[in-house]
Length: 143
Image (cartoon, rainbow, N blue to C red; front, side, top):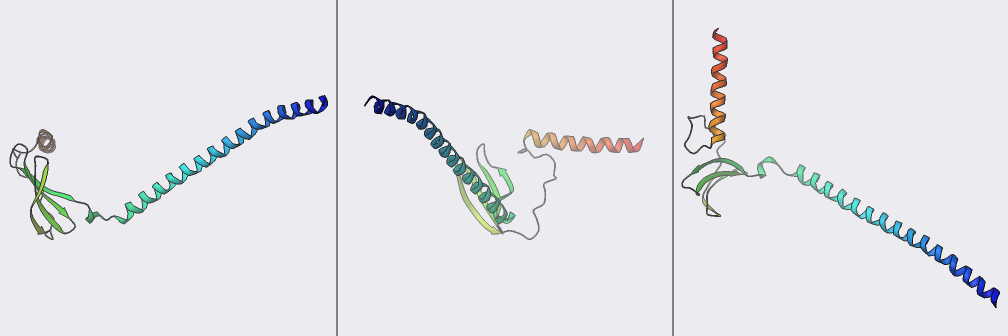
């Protein structure tokens, strides 16, 4: 019986090392499966992003046509959505539709008028730079 006991002890000792190998193999398989799932998720998200980006036309996005301030926090804005202009009142955390009209065939003219009181500093500064750059070129051409 002592021989059987020593054989059983050797087998138990051998199984202990084998269990560690089996545990590592299981851990490796689990990590590979997790990596595969993450790769599938990333691939699907890239595919959806590409499909949604190509199917969306430029006309479907809202485009700001113009806006003006009517108070400290209130503004009236014109937004083009597909072939419709929406006149919206914006203020106090609310947006209200004031009017709806079909968009004209010609694009809205750009405001190239003198500096508006509602323009911010950046717009006024950019206009001054453009004006000064134009004057500098004319001065060089004269001399």
